[in-house]
Length: 245
Image (cartoon, rainbow, N blue to C red; front, top):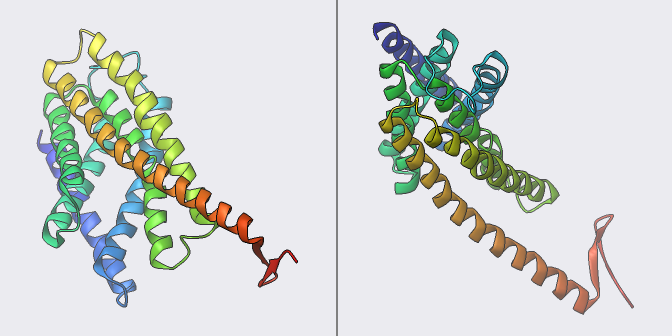
């Protein structure tokens, strides 16, 4: 267990160092700007690494849940655990997140720490991290678009659509299949299964919020379209609004 602890500590130092670097690079921006850049880097990096570990290097998470941890799985989980510890501490210090996000981070830290201590079930936990983080770059993109005044554009709509589609299909759809394989297999320990259920329940809490957001945005888009149609106003062309005479 000493080796994983050392890897987690080194990972934490690396993420803190990257955060400090971004703070120095973007000194005119707020601290959250730099933190979200770190989150974006972690999201892209961990999706690539966990995707390779889970779906190429193996073992296949839907077939071999509860299998012993491989060295590569352990390294990826240690890298991600260091980030979650950093982000959890940052969120608590700056008080930027609510109970649901803090619960998600807490479950992630406890889940990764548990499978590292048990030395098994890294296969399915790695797949859960992949599913959780695959939507993260789009979530951060939405925030950066808002901060730069580019959210209410076609690019903002595309980012929202991709985020919603990925969340529904991967975290809810594929996540349900992974949870079924986890619960139906006799190999994983009961505490690991309980952790999987808890993580999936948190995903559904997020899903309810996303569904409400998608409904409100759709209604707003529809009302805007109806208003433009009623007034005979068409979108801007070459910088000038065209009206029907």
